[in-house]
Amino acid sequence: MEKLVITGATPLKGEVTVHGAKNSAIAILPATLLCNGICTLNNVPNIIDVRLSCQILEQLGSKISWVGSNTLVIDNRNVNKTHAPLDLTSKFRASYYLIGAMLGRSKEIEVGLPGGCNLGARPIDQHIKGFAALGATVNLSQGKINVKANKLVGTNIYLDVVSVGATINVLLASVFAEGITTIDNVAKEPHVVDVANFLNSLGADIRGAGTDLIKINGVKSLKNNITYSIVPDQIEAGTYMLAAIATKGDLLIKNCIPEHLDSLTSKILEIGGNVECFDDTIHVWYTKRPNKTIVKTLPYPGFPTDLQPQMGVVLSLASGTSVINESIWDSRFQYTAELNKMGANIIVQGKSAIFEGVENLSGAPVYATDLRAGAALVIAGMAANGVTEVFNLNHIDRGYEKIEEKFASLGAKIKRVS
Ligand code: EPU
Image (tube, rainbow, N blue to C red):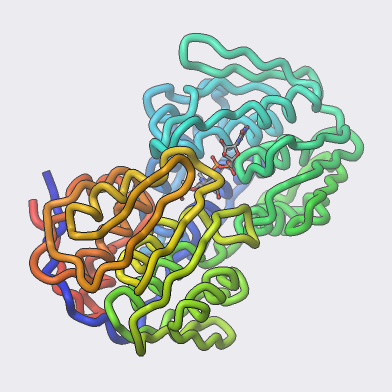
């Protein structure tokens, strides 16, 4: 079993470049199925979830190759299957995007019910509601979901919860639907906008991505060739911002879009950290122990749930008592038990966690319980006195490319050990 061994309490210093967004790449990869030609994607993170997504597309008939370290060429001219491999699709969450994309392409798809990080209940009722409204028949049985339609017809769809996955999935299914589809109460995350930009570059007619209402004017076909660059990963960038504060460091974070991190920047400034934003670079540095604060996770542009555990590490070390309220996922505080092993003082009560700030953390063996929990424990290890071992790296490798190499280049004493 692999582990990261971290000898902590070294301030991170230097420049780091952010990779393309995981949650955009794993939506745009299936979205390429709407193109019966060749898509070249740049700025693709080489992470487990992207590789899994490629394997699934290959089993449907795509031909995919890496060109250099972060460019993928996807040839979908021979995609002819409508049943995706159940063992692979049930392994990760974003396999649900195959449904919207293949409904658009072939009017039929069968996949395993999506897996992914254990963050509590993860229903897909809003996705299903959208597909059904467009005219599809949805059947769930024996861990599989089969969705098919004779034709898809545009309609007005209101999502009962703001959902990234449902927004993108229903959008994918609407690209070729007859007439106009509107999707109301949608998610506004940068990766939602990125998927719409990708599809519009291919010839789709989608307006309003990034607002509460998306309007899709169905088209008959898309171009058969595109080169597109994935948006930078705001969660990776935010992870470095919080690592800079937790380790008393000073980082220049390159290839990011500072506006995507406004909610985090405000919080870091509020607790006494320093942030300066340039066009595609963010400078974050520590000068004094952070103050206590209150954080509530919300859909974009609110504070992202995917940065909540990393923020939890900073608040573990802040002066005074802080509170985080997690409003998106039921089980996103599992990392707090691991942080407490390192000397943090955190109590979880329902959807809130109370952080009684401590002066120092100390190294311990800890287990990543999900992707962002893993990132938080790596930050905690780099901030703590002594040696921390982080286990369950498969979670971290799902979303961060070469995490230990990047942190080592910033001065962290971190190595991967088998
Ligand atoms: N929800 C429903 N019904 C649905 C869909 C969602 O009730 O049909 C609820 C969920 O239970 C949750 C809330 O709506 O309480 C938001 O869920 P959403 O659909 O937005 O989440 P997701 O699409 O499953 C994506 C990211 C997550 C990220 C969330 C929120 C992917 C593959 N995953 O999940 O990313 O936390 O949006 O921003 O894009 C991560 O990267 O670590 C990660 C977990």
